[in-house]
Image (cartoon, rainbow, N blue to C red; front, top):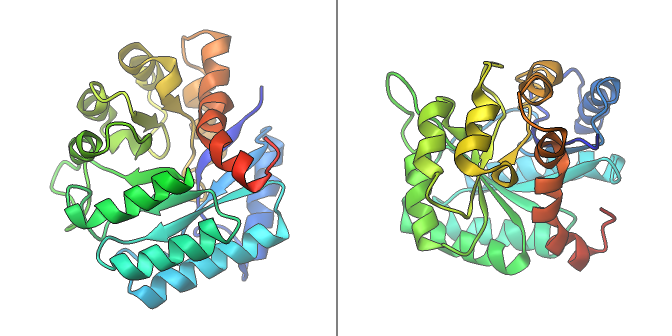
Length: 261
């Protein structure tokens, strides 16, 4: 099967430079048959980035992409706390650069209307939109979104496809929270490889709204691949989850940039 990994980081991987770290990630990916990696965030995570932090994180990803342009796909790190700086980074890295998506993390919940200009411009560029989410047992960090917050965002942009990162970690709740919003996709990355996760997502959302990701180097490729390889679903649905759904989301921006799919 073709396998594209939606969710990878340079953090948590051996190497002193972005190029070395992506090289190591690709070496591990080759062992398990992963063709392409989506990468975002730089060498050291910054949860509430300043404008300078955003640029530095994105510069590190750009360095890694330049070394391995045929194997890696980059997402620009943005923050709704810094709208104008984020719009500038979106132009620099996506409109005028090689990146194909946007990464939104913890700094500001996605219920904030400050996010709207970033979503609108990303949609114009056909960039893939990825929002980290989590349902935590204690409480989320300040600014950390949940799948329920993504449902609110989806209501503001009902025709813009967006990916719900981690499906909220507590995936039984996450799947239910996004179920009614057809423009929301479930990212399988990051949680433990518990039996039934992928089956529930396919049953409740349809196989065409579920996307494989690993969260490497925070998680191993093998444990996250097992969620799909071991699922009691059809081989055709596994192929959709492993590659076809993400590839379909990326085709519009690939065509604009002349990227081979």
